[in-house]
Amino acid sequence: MTASAAPLLSVRDLRIVFDGRRGPLTALDGVSFDIQPGEILGMVGESGAGKSLTGTAVIGLLDPPGRIAGGEIRLEGQRIDNLPAEKMRRLRGRRIGAIFQDPLTSLHPLLTVGDQLVETITTHLPVGRAEARGRALDLLREVGIPAAETRIDHYPHQFSGGMRQRVVIALALCAEPTLIIADEPTTALDVSIQAQITTLLKRLCREHGTSIMLVTHDMGVIAETADRVAVMYAGRIVEIGPVEDVVRRPRHPYTAGLMASIPSVHARHAHLNQIDGAMPRLGAIPPGCAFNPRCGRAEAFCRDHRPGLAPAAHAAACHFPLQELADA
Image 1 (spheres, one colour):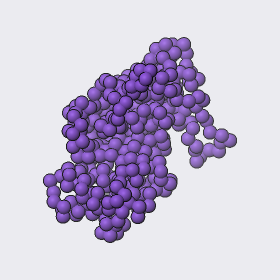
Image 2 (spheres, rainbow, N blue to C red):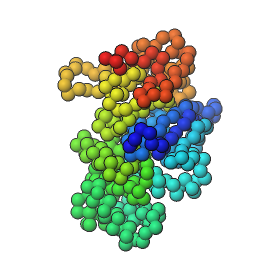
Image 3 (cartoon, helix red, strand yellow):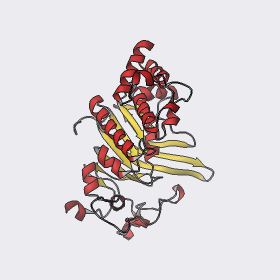
Image 4 (cartoon, helix red, strand yellow):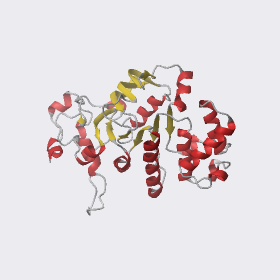
């Protein structure tokens, strides 16, 4: 991955609204970011921040009453947010893969994992079933399924949760996509299995040159896996930058609050820090900086003026960023 390379994925001013009886509610408001070839971009934030919704829009699975009301999404320079449904269906799987939180929702319970892998491969690649089965076996071995020659003919319920997630990763890689949307891929797994899956994702990204958009609420997973991180709050990106910079030198008070709420193995605390208040409802996002009611540094200017993201490698949408922390 090089900083000067053209982005694989480019999202500009993405706006998503949900039409309701009382009018449209804005769920994403002006979201912009790039993902470079071979890069892992983490998207982190509390529930309701808009991170999963962003991934859903990229992969073209946004269902009514949700709709894209503004902005654009480009994959390798091609605009994809306005493609007809059938063209988007063909692109999904072939150029964009997906890994979801619960592997059981991604796997057909009445088909063997081999049948599902072979069907996906033959749908998107010009190969016969015999060649597709060989490729399916290679993928199962690559993602760490033991005794793949036997397990390929097993059904999803015969696998543990961690092994099912490995199968889903193999399924996402079937057609050699350039981008994978991984939505909370480790949340349902125990800590040791989480570590195995994040290590696997990093290795596959490195060996295949695949880019990954990793959606999670877990800053620890982001710190271990991602190259860059975008922090979301109330449907907006409030901070974005290299993961080490954002984790060690957060510039937005919300990011600093997220980091302070993570327990440390190096220190004993009577209690963890917390961010007072809650994420605002879609119909009650405050004017100005959406985080201002929960921010101990907010001033009158913050309540009236919405901050923007500067075009910088490490940027925060804050009128009074934590520069003293960044420079310490």
